[in-house]
Length: 66
Image 1 (cartoon, rainbow, N blue to C red):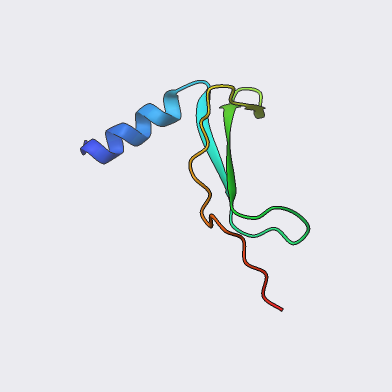
Image 2: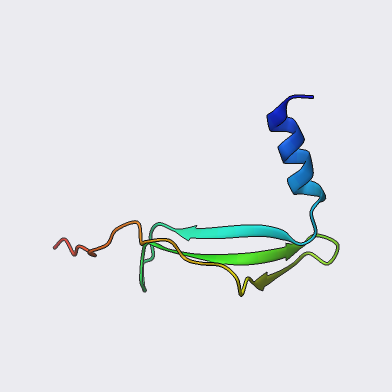
């Protein structure tokens, strides 16, 4: 088994799994943000990750084009 497949298998076996949501576009709110969740597959449940540290925004200065 290759290193990549081994890492994927380990990530799938973890409970809870760490998941990062990255928003690239948002029509009615802030765009370019990310937030972390913990996913519990046995319950199909997402909860906020209290240890998640958001990285810098993808677009540090929002631009409005008219």
